[in-house]
Length: 257
Image 1: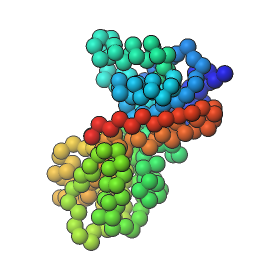
Image 2 (image 1 turned 30 degrees about the horizontal axis):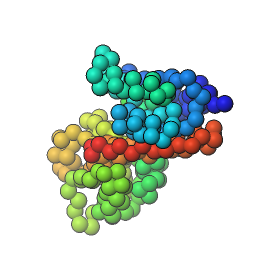
Image 3 (image 1 turned 60 degrees about the vertical axis):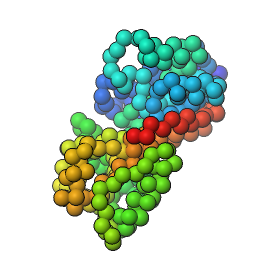
Image 4 (image 1 turned 180 degrees about the horizontal axis):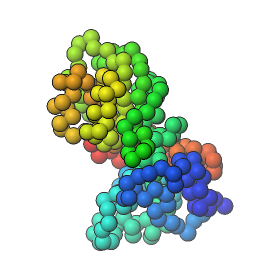
């Protein structure tokens, strides 16, 4: 019999959940318990009625997500929020969430995995949340248009269209940085310039970043918040499945962002 506390403990140790700082609303770890035992795993980027319904359809009673139940902050348990809580409890589905611990993990993390997916090899980190480096960076010698094609193909697999700042014909990427989700902040942008990066790959970014990038001879590729964060949650679902001999399914619920 596989118990939720045993699975949660293994994930917490793998992801170093207790030692990684995060936003308060992330509430990493078990967010909703169940009677159990664990019979199957569903994994998805976001907690929503769509993903809960997907878990129910597969017969899974443990749902692993990147953005959990409390991502929207403190709120009364009414309306759609009540519907989510009720669906989890009535169907005896446990919920485990991992935000920044999953982003930064060197093996299972969104940033490291997306870099490898695009044929890039990280050699360093940058872009901090408190004292935690989140983004990855490295060196290569590849045509920027070719890199954009690879990134666009990845985004398309998750119903997202790649957007980029202007790319000149013949331009090459030699120093790149990558931060999934909404990681392209003002601080990350400035640090990228200080480090001499010529290309940034991210999920989404503020409008000003697309305005400023060309003036700094920087190319930014926006591959979608959702798409860029599909890789980590699938990786830890695979790891958990192998560790505990449980079936797992990815619930793909693209947002277009």
